[in-house]
Length: 204
Image (cartoon, rainbow, N blue to C red; front, side, top):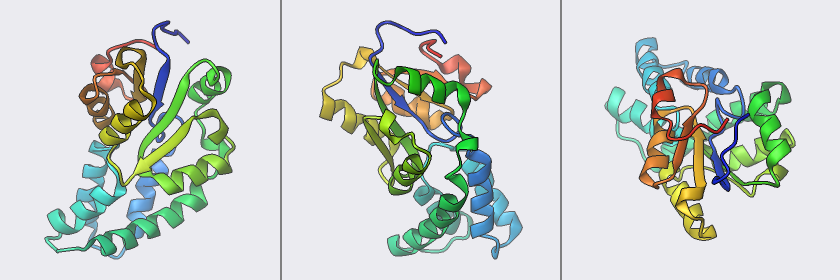
């Protein structure tokens, strides 16, 4: 792996970058919403796959309000998110899903960089998954939704007083790119060829 000497802090996306979990999450949405019309679920899946970095809270709200035209409360959205999380916890505490290239880099270099996870996945669930697969100790912190990724990064930059030109975000979705650019840090695409041209640094 190539490294860049100026980088001191790495913000990692999780799904599709540290773990091969995107297909599992796809199946989770389909299973949770199996009682709804297939064509509506298909619309949600299209939205979900085009917006990998967005949280399930946003996606469930989109499904009910935009696709089905129904009003839903925050309590309703939390109910669906909890159902989704239950499925994810059963399926994702699985070391076989870890991506060797990135996980090996993390294990070998966690003392050389400040490493944080910033994910669109539920933050509480993500911490439990990382503990369950024994990778939590490699990161200074692990964060997820419902706080948007842009804000997660902004909060960590402020909390730790990181210098922007020494920070980067590694992700696989346009929302990861947006989170990096909006916070004026470097970005590298991973696992998504269509995003490679948007990378501002070559790191991995």
